Length: 168
Image (tube, rainbow, N blue to C red):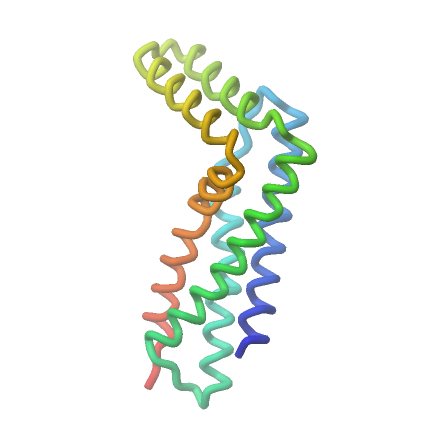
C-alpha cells in the first residue's frame, strides 16, 4: 500500500510541478501577460486523478474492499505527497529563479485594474498586494500560502474518491 501511495503521489506531483514551472517561466518571460488560472487549476485536477487511481488500486489489492476511512486516508496521503512536491518545487523556483515574483505579480494585477478604471477595487487590491508582499518575506508564509493553493483541492478530491470507491 505504501508503494501505491508513494508512486501515485510522485506522479501527481510531477505533473502539477511541470505545469507550474512552465506557467512560471511564461510569466517571467512575459511580465505583462497573466498565465491562465484555468490551466493551473486543471493541472491540479489532472494531478489528483492519480489520487483517485491510487485509492482504486489499494481497493483492488484489498480483495476489492475498502472502507470510507481507509479510502479517505489513502487519498489524503497521496494529496499530501502531491502538495509537498508542489510546494518544494515552488520554493526552488522562487528562491533560485524568480525572487521578484510578488513584485511582478502585484504590478500585473494592479496595472490590469488601472486599465479597467476601477479605482475602488484598485485601492483594495493594492492593500491586498502589499500584505502579500509582506507575507512573502517569510519562508513559512510562502510555504503556507503555496500549500493553500493546492491542498484544499486534494482534500476535496480525497473525499469524493472515498465516497465513490468505498466498498464493503
